[in-house]
Image 1 (cartoon, one colour):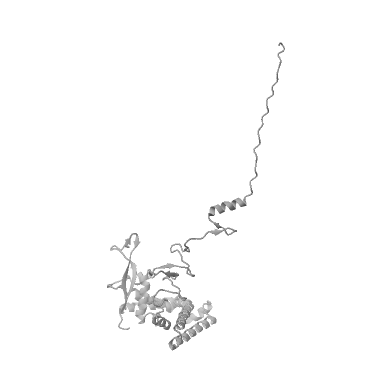
Image 2 (image 1 turned 120 degrees about the horizontal axis):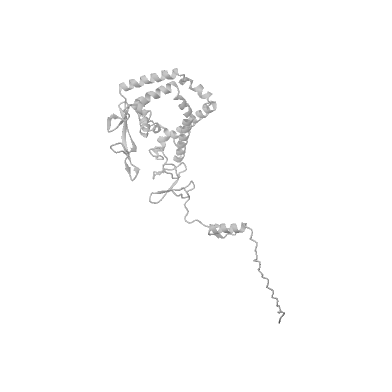
Length: 330
């Protein structure tokens, strides 16, 4: 690997116009795949990076930061590590080695060997998770801070455009990089730069469980489980999934639709269950209820007490009395 002076990688980025503004099509951003590269740093850059490393170490030590030798005691004081966790870690390591031996020895069913490899992946990930607290704390030691500063300085001066290696991606070096670390180009580039400096490839490629799974085509190039023959993504139980882990089922033409964990079809937009024709609900006598509004009215009618019937009072008028009078002179 000593003759490798650069590593090239591709990444999808937002396409831009000549003035630097994003390209739009029907209001949507346009993306394009571009190539970038990381180069071995020049001697002068290495010299400046080493000076920065020494400077950061002294400043951290003067500020009272812990040394790496003190890390174990600090972890135990903070409850991030103890004898029980150490025992669990050692057990996981032993279990991984036992399964690795079985894979190398062979003589078992291929599907059983697959399960051993998958168990190795899970146990190894558990070990990584257990060490995450230690790794985070290590970055806060004098050594960790100084080493990170050196790496960042070197990387900031080594990332270039592959079609124009004379133009650095970060014109102002470390000053530009520290405010752009979340950029996908920076993240991918830093990983590639680590491989370039260390003279190694992706560590996942070297793991025995991944070698086995890839050899027998149980995984794709990204070490995701796939169905043999079709290369469709699957989970541990062999159920189809998309790249985000959602369950799917395939049509005969190769397209797919979303389903729940039990294989029932889901609407892609809403996530609701898809049924051909919903059946009506039944009343207490087993009769179909057709109109929900009618049911509501009937229920209300049953709950309300019946209104008291009132009769209209008949109106009577008193007949006028007539009195006959006799004229006295008659």
